[in-house]
Length: 267
Image 1 (cartoon, rainbow, N blue to C red):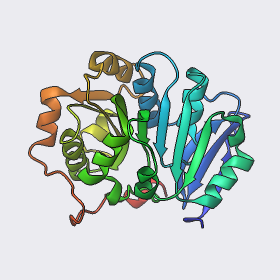
Image 2 (cartoon, rainbow, N blue to C red):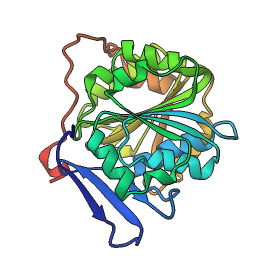
Image 3 (cartoon, one colour):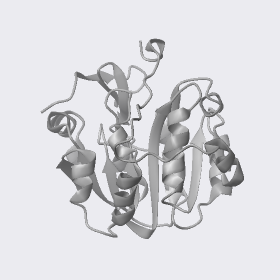
């Protein structure tokens, strides 16, 4: 089964670069010869978090596959890492495997299933890193944003493990505030990173949540985020509590709609 129209577009500026789009929305970028080249700023922010984790190979779970940019990056920077990718679109997996050389990534296994179903199949305390980057078009499935689902991700993570969540939101950031409130209800240490205009709710875009049951290296994350091309911000501690400002956590059954980008964003 496939979910929407998929396109593979070659990057005219990089010989081995490819953009994967679904329904007109860019989902992934990969350079087949240099997996450490990350075109999208929000992916770079996730990589900044991964770079400051303890040295050595990682056991990783990726909910949402796309072109597997992050698994490729982790394998290149931390040889010996293992990856379980949960992706509901089996035809997309086949396309990426054949056209974007997914077989070149060692120790990578794909579970073709929805996020919640696939996560239920993963062993307890088996992951150092969970990356939740699942979208239907430009919208995050709300069933992957609830306290009940994050509890299952906590089960999968080792006590020292780290969770990364990619959110998309716009004016007012109402969905982002509720999702961060949900994550803070499960994890004791949380940070939020985004480009300044996105963080202020002035422009629709991506925000990255990093969470763990142990302290995050927030000073390093603040420096690395600010040092990128967009000089992103890292919000944590009391500033993050102020950002949430009483927003209610999301639970199964809540009438919550994930934000949809305004037409000009991808048009």
